Image (cartoon, rainbow, N blue to C red):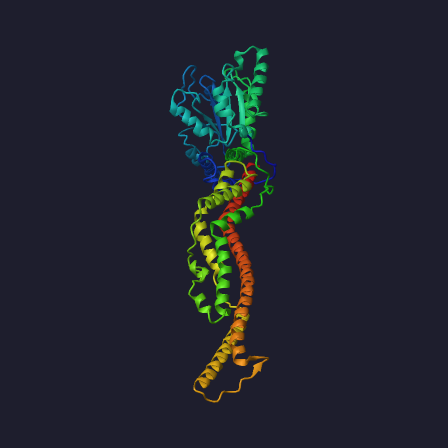
Length: 528
């Protein structure tokens, strides 16, 4: 399909710059042949602009027997070209020069060694007689292809017998549809046709050219033998030469054709490329969280808090048993941000991550045409091999410090627990003293009572009961605190995972979409 763009006044320099940038952006995304062709066009334009712009290189191209060499002689008023009928006679392009001064570098670049100065008023015209494009000699055809791609103005010389030949239409005319402004088509040898058939053949030829995308290209009927139509053709060439713009029109057409080749479908006009929003989806966050072992870490945070809370506020008589158990969080090597000992993701978790990555790529590439959509989907997975280590570090960093920062109430509760132990100790010592005095039959100490219960017994039993009950109450607060810390840890882990997904998945995807948007903009500018 042709590249449809909004016409705008864009300079040739800007279009060449846009084409060069578009080729760089398309590297590795589009076909290498189109990319290389675009770069070749930019390079060729750079050289042509540095050569004589006062000269216009016009090529006569045609098939064997079309009479282009005869037309070359008629236009130049010479007998420079050897005329043949049934076999190729032109092996190397030759040039007739009107005003040869300064044309040397241009002809050197075109690699045209045969140069013939011609007297006349068309100063600046360089008329080239090319070999036959259908020659049996491969070197002849290659010479035609090389010069057709480089000259400023193309004059296609056709004859009444082969003007509809598919070879010239499919190989040259149709691919050069964007060069209609630097192209002229001549139906030569009209003197061989009955007068009533000339107009019919010309109309038929215009119809074929319109089908090739060359509607509006000047079509002239001429006869190099009788001179019919030659003055009109010469006047047309003189007008083009006097304008001194054929070279820039040719380069502009080359740029447009290269831009069209870079992109086979119609991109939006500059500034109107609508990119989808790429974000970290809930499904992706959930899949990454499970793959990173977040549920196990969150539970370990809650258990670690309860473990440390009981060790700090439990009944001192039995709390030492708690210290014999490992901290659930430290057991995962997460307490200080070190590399974790979390188990590797299961096959189901890996599959869930892979599915989520595919979904992100599919959503991001939904409005981007192929083959760039493939590049967008690839970008979404381009750094997936870094996910495991990044998620592990994120989990470790998010849980680092979760075993520090003991709540103030732990210290108060611990003090209270030691007071209960002190009461128990006081009661026990008091009872032991009374037992010793009674055993030694010494006078006993006065023993105050609470009701009927002696104080030593109250202190011993009351301290033990108070310690156990207070420890049970502290366990309730430890459970509540553990849940609160687990929620905070889950929030921090979710934020960390979203950041990793943003850096390793979303950012490359957005960069690729931005690259496509810039590419589409540059192609549109180059084709304008």
